[in-house]
Image 1 (cartoon, one colour):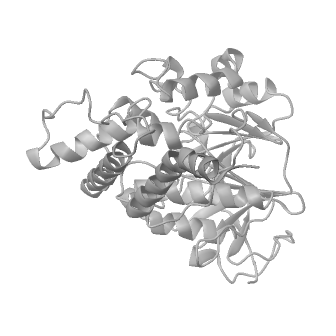
Image 2: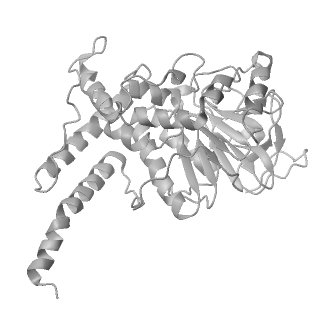
Image 3: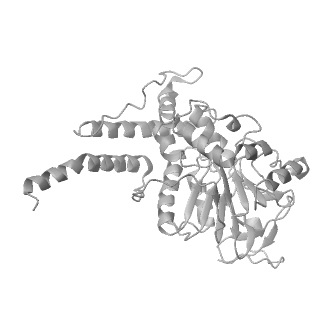
Length: 395
């Protein structure tokens, strides 16, 4: 029978880990205002590159640091309620990247998505996040599109993160945390002195193997096939497919995790990169390279369409190339023009449609005979670029 002393020793042995978990929770709440559900006890599965078709698939475009618009888009899709709890059931939600830059709530969105990932997993659903060009830029240390409020958000994060490290360093049995500012420049040429601390915090958080990049971006995918759709932030060329979609995902994750130097893989840089390409995204349909798109899709078994963000569509979500290129970045962030939220839905029953908050398309008679379900908002039958056809969706 275990003695009282042995019981005490056994309890004390776990104190450092309990304290570390408490400190992490304290820091998370101080930064985001959220208490995250407990993470899975098992290690995360390998990054998905190919997933079967779910009954309901939701695609959400670029968010760019606008927390309120992000929530509006997720509510429009019916995957969160008014208290920001996950309500999407077994749905699969894909967010195509560009959470960072142009707004001041970048970290809050990352924390919200992490919370929803854990809640969705408990309901049989999934939320998958992707790398956009702005995630790649920030991990490389390119902060051209960071806002004043965004820089300040990271400065506040660093303050709480270092306080948490100080608490951990007081406990015997815990490894002394490394200062996240080690090796980071004190000043930044071309930036006003008042922003230097914020830039240092941003570098510390987002550089390869930084606390934020490691935590939130190593499980991002860069290319994703779900059923008969392929998701990518910018676009795919034949060379990308022949290089290997699984290989791209693994290499980008390894780079973010700090095992491949400071600069991203070559297919993430330049105008033809998977996160930068615009060949299929021009708002003028005739300028899109449909022949290349056809060739790419023909080399990926079972795939009918490419879904991408990156290039703002001022008329809302639309399709070109016989509906084989679907563009879902509507510039909803106030840092990108403040477009009205829209999301794409692919439903096993009603097919491909747009859910929109645009009042121009609400309360219209259903002239298409298209089955749009009963989600709140308007469902729009996806048609070739030039304006969606309106269909009514009753609350």
